[in-house]
Length: 382
Image (tube, rainbow, N blue to C red; front, side, top):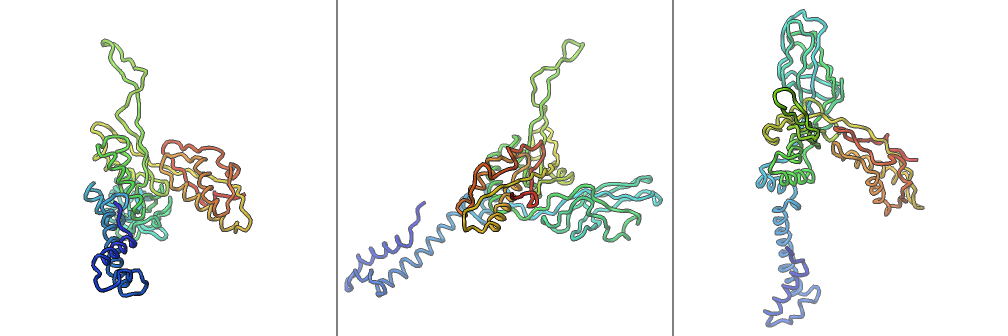
């Protein structure tokens, strides 16, 4: 829909003034600073442009492509019954152990607080130790949401109130890193997820299963793949023969990852529970945690004369890190995409060509379940 501009409104006001003026020269409306000019500009053009801007904003609020903030929340909620994901706390699997079973059987209750440097977690399931058991596991989540409270492996090593444990000798550890700590879903990410919901509304398809997984708080990307196997049938009552042609085995492998490219068993269990609403009846979805794989990138850059090479070089390095770390789980890093990224900085004085990218020498294809990632120390300039 084409809305009138401020000049269009001024022209409409001028036309109205020409048709109504009786004791004043109609041409006065075009004399800058005249009473007629000020009247038409302030009444027709000024408030009219504000009204048009309000109409445009309200019109945009009724479109998925243009709605923002609360308008986008309202559009998706009204039409798809889906909500924006808020900031999610990191999930982790804890291991409680003790040197001896002197105090017999007992359990670490739900709600027990444990801590790592700069972060605190609370147990969400019970860790039960038998009379002779020396260790047990349970799930926990961060008390505060966000990526900054997501800890690495073996970082949680302290019980906040050890006097509340049934066995004071119990020690806590997290064998695997925490995963799923994410910030509030941004408009662009939420909008793209809404598009996928529309495309996969029938559910039960590969795309629908991936969409259902990314709807779980803490999951940023997912990759599903059908598993295949042979058919066996009875030949009389003596033996079974297998058909060589592979057929779907009624099983789907689903790899998940958070924004950092990692996942763990606790996050996988959360996705597994959500799959009841997305998978076909009778089809098993095996949820597997994705693992990050670091990819080194070596650049050989050339610059135009007069360019601050240190500033532009650092800007390019950070852009490469941001691009690689945006790749979903199971997605390849294409050499052509990196070269295209470098070409964006030609206007800033960067001289690019095939020799600008030394490594990777070709496309990098991740193994199933791997997420390609990098960091500034791995993006080097030569």
